[in-house]
Image (cartoon, rainbow, N blue to C red; front, side):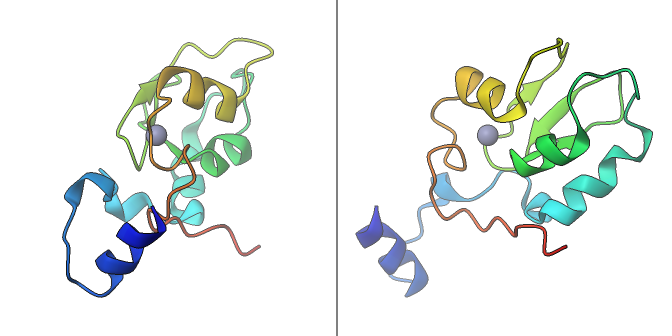
Length: 107
Ligand SMILES: [Zn+2]
């Protein structure tokens, strides 16, 4: 993986498969902003969801990953954003820890 990342940085190889599906949601802060209408009854917090690469699609409790494009909904009490994301989309490059351009929240 390191070798591939190096070559991508230097522009020798363009492997679009590691690029995020929704590039404008790479920033955790941007993702957090999408949760302004997040239902207060949902058992998972916007902070946890945004941190797990997810942003709100604006309907019910549907969220999407900026990286793999996978969508999750029907959150239940006890669910963890990161655990559900990795359970349903185990090959997501963000979940796998690749450098997909995520910009963590700076507070
Ligand atoms: Zn994902």
